[in-house]
Length: 427
Image (tube, rainbow, N blue to C red):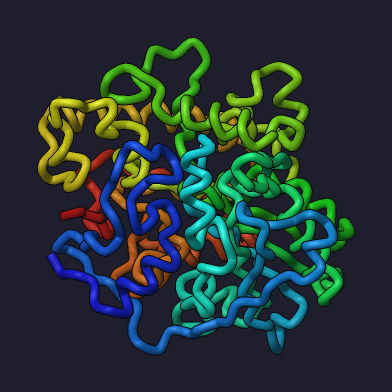
């Protein structure tokens, strides 16, 4: 295995939003998971970040305060914007940062003293790699667009609107979303001739939830589409299904989401077409909303998402005796029954997206890798040895779909058939 170098680790920490430095505290304060600094690639792959990644400064949204659009601790939200030029001057890509959720007052109080809850702790510069890269050889279709990384500091995928005065917590994700879009529209985005809303993990969920809102910002003549990368647990709520959601038979992530939705006042900002017939927590799950998104949507997922294995399928709370300890850190150490369980998870996910995939306007790239957030990492987005399906890397698949050059509905064969994966393992 090849360990990350300094710049690779730094870029991964900036971009790989599902884990915090102290683990998954923003999901469950009792469970400490593995951090990015403990991650390495499996021996058939290598990291490609380099020391020359573009660094983009943080801009705070000054107008947000008057709208009550603030981070958990009341500080201003912000974004990183690298301006477009040439043929991309009027093209806009918004990347919604990921980084888990906070589902209890205790977890949110912890989170508000981190970069996921306060702009006081955010990096002043972020490396733009993968879909945010400014180099055509790294990002062939979007390199010269206006590319914005909207920072995530609310803990509810940009959907909450509530507060807890006793704990001095502001749950204003929906307002942050609105304030950021208003700011960008007034800064030139209203003139866009094409736009793409994307996000990974918690940001991937947000890109689904806000996709049609984003579409409605623009006239019908503007090409507007959405990309969701590694949206959590597309398969955990199959109606009448008997799939065991975690290894103990429990519903770890549903319990987390229930806390997020209730604590942060998310219900009023969820799609009504969903809440009219399902409970609000169910409408925070991607599989229950993707079928009702009107704008074209591309789903990029691994069949064996590293975050889902560690945080919702086999978390320590569901595995008190540690039977899954080695497997959840390194897929090569999974037993035959454990792999069979993961294959069942893959099958349920494919069943969950079957209806979605029937729409001609939608796109899919589901590879059989143990990874997460493949659009944000340069080595998985577009590099000499990037993961491929049908000889096509992720960047070209997304580009072909966005520009209608080809229909993209690529689903990999089951593990272990794909030798192009950049699988993650953890120490």
